[in-house]
Image (cartoon, rainbow, N blue to C red):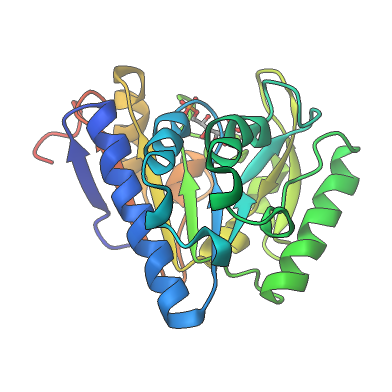
Length: 246
Ligand code: 6PG
């Protein structure tokens, strides 16, 4: 497997600004070339600063031509603060308002439904809009301290899914029930951006980058591989401190 592209930014604010530049460039290019762009947002806390950067430059993304998806969701109602949709709605979609994507282009995972039903419905939506491979133009991903990404947690059966685009999984921390894109869905993406910030991610990041291309025993994030797309790690200096000469 090729050496991963890693870009180190001084701190979390610079990471968020640089990530916003990458998101703007990727979405603008797809809209220019295809007339439409599809981006899957990540959850957790890291994306908040990115969302706030995008809100400060609302006209830089042609949101009217952009469809918003999620890489994963916690199985909680959309108004629950633990919901990844809630994070994006509060820090990106609502602040963008009419300058943001039309509601019909926001494809949330129905966290309020039973997980298997939510996963099946999301997969049908992906296939309806994007075709059988569900090829997203841009997928944002985070990294957990246990090496998970999206809701692909160590030891979970979802890691072994080779056909379906969406699966359910269980997180070791609450909310335990999750819905997640699978490796096949991630592999189909044209571009993936891992956004990793903070000293607590230094060890996990080193282990993931050391293990890339390894098999089933590798941390889940190390097993993300794009068929033909580009994968870029954008990390801050604190997260990169164990990477040696990056
Ligand atoms: C989630 C995310 C998850 C997240 C990582 C990093 O639903 O929690 O999709 O994969 O990206 O856990 O989370 P932080 O950004 O909070 O460190």
